[in-house]
Image (cartoon, rainbow, N blue to C red; front, side, top):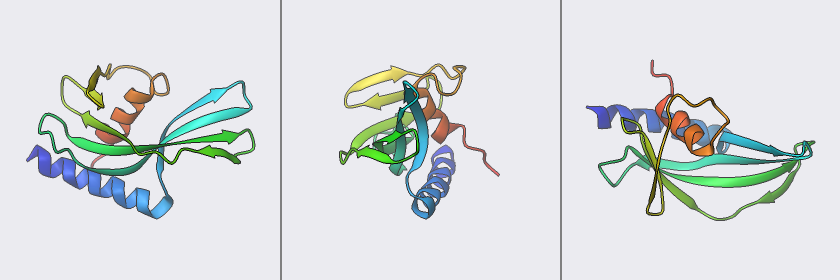
Length: 121
């Protein structure tokens, strides 16, 4: 049942991504003149049953006016587990997620929150 619910959430996220372009889940500013945004480009139910989602992350750099300075063409893959222990896997490294962390402090937390804290109606 949990997998069905997660698939429905992912479908809603994917529809949002398709309609408006990649969904930014984390932005870091550097010196006020530049920022780097991480976005969800793709998502699907995880192949590994220990995780809930497999996603592809994109990276873009912007100047203070919002002009794109750099767009990384790479496919950065990650897996996300929503339930305890909350976790993000990148390559073969697992990162525990402090679900009580404040938004914006850590990109891995923000990725987890974008997928696992999405409101369900």
